Length: 220
Image 1: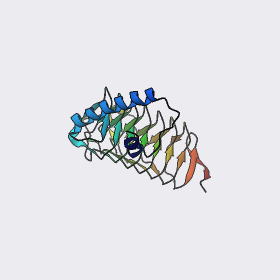
Image 2: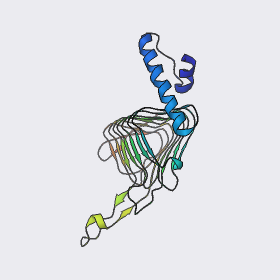
Image 3: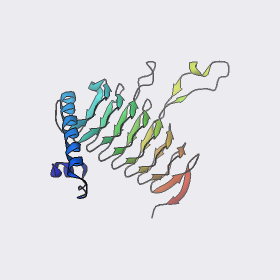
Image 4: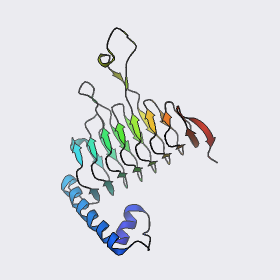
């Protein structure tokens, strides 16, 4: 089982962890593996309890996918939900590709070796693309859709929406409670400080922070 764990995570197990904890963990993973087989018809996909996947035909996955408990995925969209290998989706996360029936969303794509933190929300109506080796903290939200509001004679809710899409480069670290708005492109190797609100695009290898987010230093 340890060799299986190493293959799944790329990490070794701390020898100080009690054996009964490891046994309980392995049992839960075995049950999750069976759920993944029932859902997708193949092994190397782990799905924990109370998960909801709508429009599964639009969802495409590689091996070693780990979906934690109480995750909701609505894959209905033009491009669907595409998840790379060794992707982990934290518990209570929601991925919604179509905000309303008036507009079929673009979809959600995530590369290999990515960790998506817990309690996150990904509104992918305008399209969200995440690169490889990306770390995303807890309570992160991404919104690839905006309401039109220019006409003061019409209620905002009746003016429709516009979409530009969100792109996150490779090897980025996005801290907890970050909000990323529509039209943002983040370059490779960026770090976004916890609590930041990202309203514009940034080049590669910079550290950004604040409301609204701005560059505070470059990575050397």
